[in-house]
Length: 298
Image 1: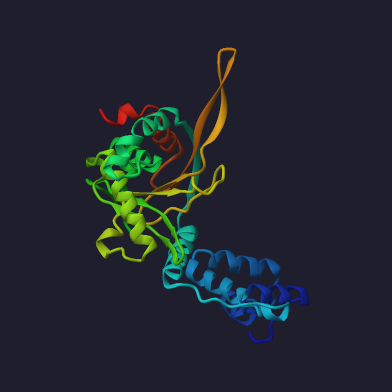
Image 2: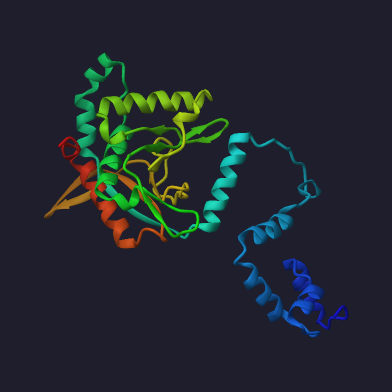
């Protein structure tokens, strides 16, 4: 089978795709191979993500200096670990992102009213504290989101606790400290925890018990900008909530236009566990809590 019959274009295509024609001929029992045989081999390989990833990485090994000046910077360890996890999540999880927005007028009024008390307490009452509270309440109402899928995909593990991760952008990479028992804490305690954990993340002082085990994570880009994005699910969680900058939207009350501050929300979820209707109901419930924060306190 070493004498494989294939056109020059088929040989070039096989080489580009990393397919050994001699091995393919032995495997298929055929001496004459065409491009369709290479494609069939690639389709079979697609069920083995690790092998396919290895092929892709080999093609990415390029001498960039051959094209112009370059500078090499080592990737921090935290960034390397995050990159591996995110690449695996993106390759293995069938993720979908649902988009919505919520009126934050009441939240901003409440924050303004509490400004003096926040100063006396020495706590910064950020909008993120309200989002953590709303997410904790919504996870309680939708237990399927507060779950993890077993590695073999056969068992759904429903969690009886509510821990919320907060993604923190640091100079040494993305870190996700976790607020434990967020459903049992009030806004002041949540605000204090957010400030403390974010500060520790920036200084690389997070302890092991302050990371991992989240029910779900919030990735908040509101302080930077953007109108929407598709956050990658952070396994073994089954969903992640993305937030971007609040924007003023014109809402019509009959014939009267009214400017309303709205926060864009992006919910990415593992479609093996959650379907689109569940995601829409989850985010609609979440938006109702943000729109009327009094409901979070009941």
